[in-house]
Image (tube, rainbow, N blue to C red; front, top):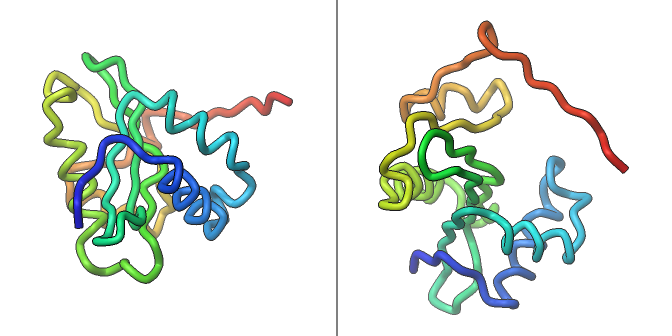
Length: 135
């Protein structure tokens, strides 16, 4: 596996296929996938020996106070091999994010124990997640 911080056009297509396989990213278009890669503050991925993207995560950040981790996704055939842990460690230890005070992410309740093992804690009692749909 090689660590990558930018995606080729082929790897953007790979990412789009990964997104299409998950309920939470299924409706994203290829154009939206290109755009979110381009406009993310930082991306981290792992490519196999053939250069195919098999794991990905992205970060939006001000590089000072907050970094919000999005879209941590692993190809189904590469799960349970430590790639999620490696992605998180790469992000949490990335030199561009060394000044960050708060790393944040969203997850399903059943994934909370996994992220807690990295030092994340639930803030539900302190914060309310709010969303406004815009279309």
